[in-house]
Amino acid sequence: MQIQVRCGCGEAACPEWAVVEVQGVLQPQPCFSGRIQGLHIGRLCSTSSPPSSKGGYTFTIGYHELAGSKVTLKKPLLVLRKKKNGKGGTGELGQGGPAEVELEVIGIIRHKILFKDRPKALISKPVPKEKKALPAAATPSTVPPAS
Amino acid sequence: MDAAMEDAGAPPGSDWDRGSGGAEAVLGLTGAGASLSVCYHEAFGPHADLILLEAGDDLLPDLLQGRVTVRGRPEEEAVLCTPSATYAMKFVGTSNSMFLIPPGEAVAASLRPDHTNEDATVASDASASIIKVAPGSIELVRTAPRLDKLRSLLRERPYVLDEDLGDDSEDKKGLYTWEDLCVLVQSSDSELLEGLNSLSAVEIDGFWRTVDVNSVNTVLDMILHNSVLHDWLLNALPENGVLSVMESDGFTHKIVAHCLSRFGTKVEQEAGSCWRLDERLVCLQFARKALSAGKMKLNNFMDKWERSIPSGMRADLQMLEGEVLYERLGAETWVHAFSVADLPLTPAERFVALFRERPRWEWKDLQPFIRDLRVPGASSEGLLIKYARRTQPSADADPIFTAR
Image (cartoon, rainbow over all chains, first blue to last red; front, side, top):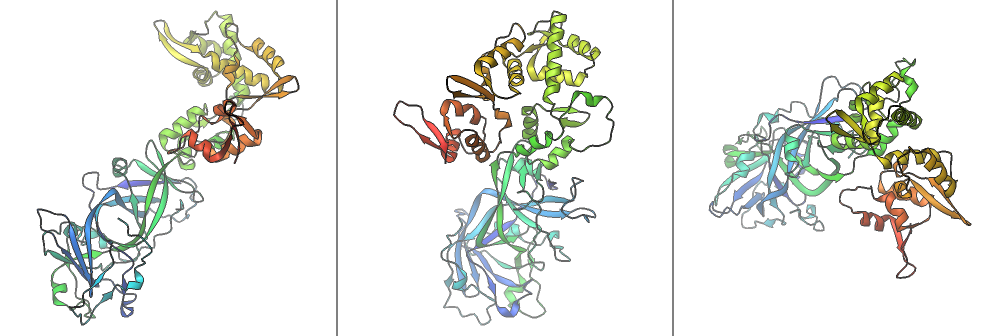
């Protein structure tokens, strides 16, 4: 079978997506399990002044603070969206006929804000009702950070 | 990844793409102290229909202008094809959390009914919204097109001369159009076309066919026969003359033109188009014919070969590089057909086939059977080191290659 990769936006106007990348996983507290849509995670803060624009950032999640920077990807990432066309009732083994599945380029990622270090605890600032925690156990130290 | 990608299972009401992600706000966040709230999107979920594909800047124009397809049967590893190149698709997972933030204006996070976002600063200012945590991305690695399959498809039903007569059945089994091949063969269009050329395939009535070897021999014999009858020079066969004489002999235009291009090159002259037959290609065809019955003593073969070739041409054993193997049995040298064109196209299988034929190879014998191997990112030397063991009995002796 053949899947066409289409792009509705064209080369010049492909919308840019953003990526915030942290080491390990973000674990919502058990009480939110299943419905975290719309939930606030944390605050992203720029730490450098425009002229230098070195792209320093902090990301504060609950009482954890991460320090990171903006990284330009060596190779951009395209965001593809898989679309099923029409009926598509014959399953994946459709014999040669017109492709039922299409991939559409819906965005491009050229930069990410990467937090490659483990979080630092903000002990001076007690958070009465923290929503998320980034437990140390969830940040595997054996895995080198992607950079 | 599999060619049949997992079903997406998009959550109902995924209207997130109307734009409210805030990617611009994230990327544009500069200046000491500038900050932005980050939250899960209202439509946050697994979104298995969203896939990240890493693409170098050289590939972007093709991808963004719709010139790229993903090809493969569900049971095959998917490949991505630009108009001219084939890439393997490798999913690379990450243990980091990659939060994807779609474009669109950052909007204030809605107050959740359960007041979990009750912090006033959070609710009031703009938020960037995460739609999905990407488990990794697909990397593209240049790969050789899978042309072995093309060869086996086209050998299912070679074109034979008599099929023009009678056989009017609608049976299309074993016949493939260009579109069929694009779907079945994991290759970019231009590599597919090159593959068809190297198989000497020809498009007949919309189907790409190889031509049965006996039929090729018959047409070639008739062209040579007519050249004698009509005093045509073998290095200047008049195209129109050949086509019309052959047509009156019952050969279709298409198949005669195919044989001319298979054994010659076109030369434009004032009097019209001419074809110059290639001595090596013609002699090679006669050598194959001479050896088609099996192995022969070299002397007998040379006699038979030299007698069969058209007068004016000269047979030379160098023409048979990559087409025959010699064997010493007692005082005699024997020769048998062993054509590189019949060997597998992937290096691993090629070396298996070579060492099955002969456990030990001298370099001068081996070289014609591996020089056509093309693997992106590997040289012939690299392939040799990977698949063969090199031994050299003494410093001035020729190296010997054996299986690993």
